[in-house]
Image (cartoon, rainbow, N blue to C red):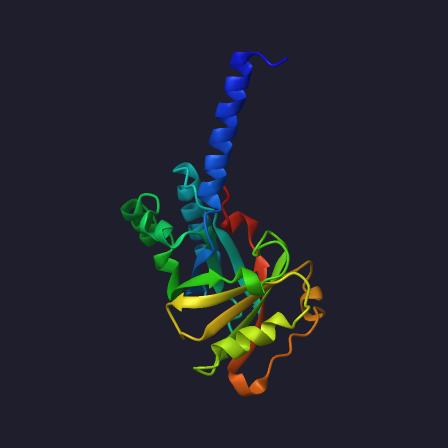
Length: 223
């Protein structure tokens, strides 16, 4: 039989583990930032961003941060980072925001321009399989801007798709209010182009594009 002290210790461990898990996976909201390295400064930007990621690690940031470079599409060479699986209120409680901004200003801003900063909500009822993103080598990213008033038709059309694992996000603030992102994992550069095609009604989609991003492990952070 398990002794009382050992049982109590296991209960405490379980409580700590589950509370920590809830902290990292508390909702469906994401913050996504797109950054353009300055001309000729890609290496300096990468090194500076890695120093900034080290700041998050050294300060025990409880949030995970994913980083990718665009390798196919009209944002070629730009960088995207994001933190996912949050409750909306989490974004009012980021770790040491003043110090974070100061470190960002020191290590990232001199080498890059910030293009966009957005908040998305993952739509579980339209997504398939385990939540994305993950640390797959590549991320296939599809952006759709729907004609205003046709959001429900667009979402209904997604329900009929069987594209394999996919996460669907809707923009909540920071850009076109009828914008959606579809994320799919890819194992290689070529496999991104061989994923099953996503076909949606042209009459309700104002703009659509596909891009491929390469995951950057040294520019990502996981507690």
